[in-house]
Image 1 (tube, helix red, strand yellow):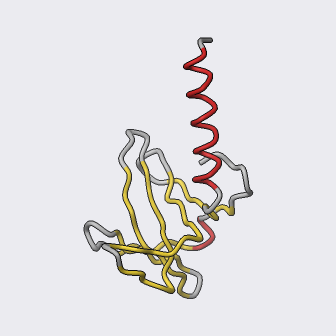
Image 2 (tube, helix red, strand yellow; image 1 turned 60 degrees about the horizontal axis):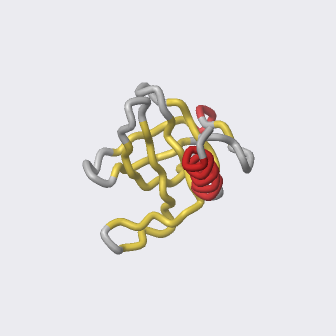
Length: 103
């Protein structure tokens, strides 16, 4: 393995660890990726939408979608930032992530 590949792998590992630090739960999606809930504040166009938190979804093909979420009863309610589309998911569909879990 060349030096540049080694450095790239170390950087990706470091970035993935830092990104994952705020991820708290995830649920598989139909695109082959996950809907990930974070502990980060939901900020859109410079406005903080507290008490909502940041979520994001990604697919196996590399598409990423930003959202805000809140929990209502036993349901995770998401609002996708670009489309404004709202979706509701049973909270039992999510797995709690341990620190260091690969997303």
